[in-house]
Image (cartoon, rainbow, N blue to C red; front, side, top):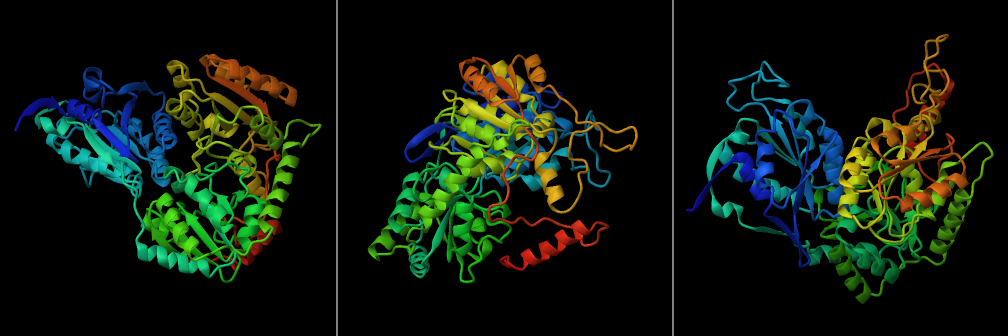
Length: 620
């Protein structure tokens, strides 16, 4: 056997540089680069290897480990999970900064490869700088925190262990059903140790992602269920997007006259004005989707994990005869809500069902209900887009202006706060892959980093990030990296002077404002009840080198949006919106824990309401 002597770090880089993924006959280089923040735990091992051996792997210099990992995750999401960028950090705090993103990627079923440095395998220098020690178990380090949020976790304590670790890493990263975060912990001494690796290990390796075909019996069972139902509704989830099931979803909906609602991950697969599109469904859904879902006798869940926001905490489906039928590559997701299921790729599952149901002459019993519900909602969005207030800008008015200005090819990115809810309801995408929302984890701080990752993935398209002031303050460091890399992103910062979404939730349950608005501490009361804090976000971004604008009127917003299109560098528009001007309601409910014992009557009443609504939910 021919061998080559390499350090573990060199072998890792050489292997990653030769991984490819094939899907539907199209082959792509799978690992396109590495995000890094170098420290003593990786700079002299993997860092030295990257300097010498990186070849086709571009190095991106992160500013915050969580931020760079968010960017890597967003890149993979925008690429439909066909390409990834790996992330490396030092040990201790540098590594732990990536745990949040590890959870975000795993929840969202997005491939993310993390390569955190680790303590010395030989243990001779212990305890080293930034080492976490467990007196009862010396094998535990900070990196064990990645275990519950990783789909595969390994610690490479000897250089030859790298081979099995990497094969398993690729197994998970390229599996549509089981993908998520892969964490390979790299002890800093082992990164620099050499081994005689088999040359064949570094040959070009193509990972073939074959569409999972449905079993014929499963299709027949599903068809029998559908045939017995008059008013079904489809839920389009992220799995339909990653499957690229646009044509199959359209054919299925139109052939059998079945409307569809969208999850955050599934929104935009078909254009908003498609005749059977009811828009977002669930807690942040439209009246059209939620009213149809309320009376539906069958829910056809395509590529969705049926989260509480999608099902309105299992409250959305009120028909006593309603059943759930799932099409999903992941059996764990397919069986949720006591569903019957077809375990299959979304496109293949829909295609097989369409063929069989066409032969059997099925059609739904809907007459004009879909059209009426859709027209009613479209009118409501027009109203929301047109709201004008003397006091200042409403959030929905601003979103309408942005939607009508930036163009059909522009990508929007978001993740947390009130904006995702508004966007799921009122945003009107035309082209696929222009609506990029991380809402599986709703991770504050994903937004700007995610926009940078999306821009790397789609350099020819304009990328706009929708972010609240709370999320901006939490994490915006990769704005600097976007400027460094010449990858222009446009930050649309909605400043409502606090955590507006949670402020609304707090008050909706009878709790007065407490710790959710950005106010100075009052000298008189000792509470955070003073004046609101005026923050010049434009000045902050300008100090990094971004072009910035501050707007308080629609005319200023229009002017700024025109100018940012012409800019060659990253931009930020500081949009001063009025608090409490987001959307709410529309036939939904969301279960949160409301105190059973409280001093306020308003809280007790909210608890009673919660108990009444729980009675309406499905018990599985």
